[in-house]
Image (cartoon, rainbow, N blue to C red; front, side):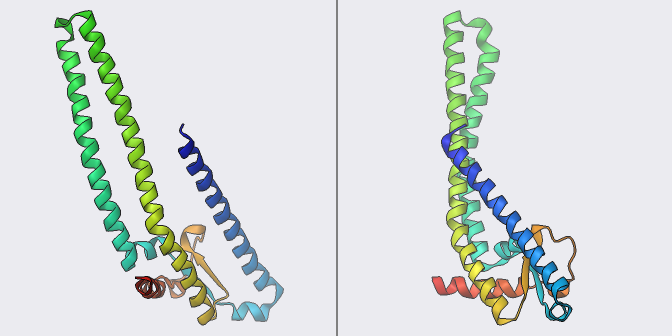
Length: 193
């Protein structure tokens, strides 16, 4: 495994731990509000949002998706052409090896193995390039969304706003504020351009 992959895995694990701790703290806070003060529990206003939907349906999210899809198509085209060449080389070795000398067979096997390793390295590089592009495109959007959720929550007197992907098993659509947050994020991202 490469050092870059190890760093990425550690970052991913750290993000999962942070999300888990946040959800635990949010649920604990909601429980404390409800148990600690019945009057406060009646005033508690909880909202549910879908970060995934905000990212896919907002204008900035759609733009980022189009950019990433274009880059993925470009990389896939490059890799497919090289992959087909490697398959053709493998088929040539299988068909013609009986007519070749041992030296020629060995040269072709070495060439095939070298090209396969290079291809695998290029695939890994493409994956890292896509992860980097995804981070570059999504990080500013997620920071803006965090600010949007914070200001929206304060302005609309929410006690708690949760992401539906973070372990919420049921919620009434009446408390889903995703559509409103998409509008707010579009406005916030438009102001950054």
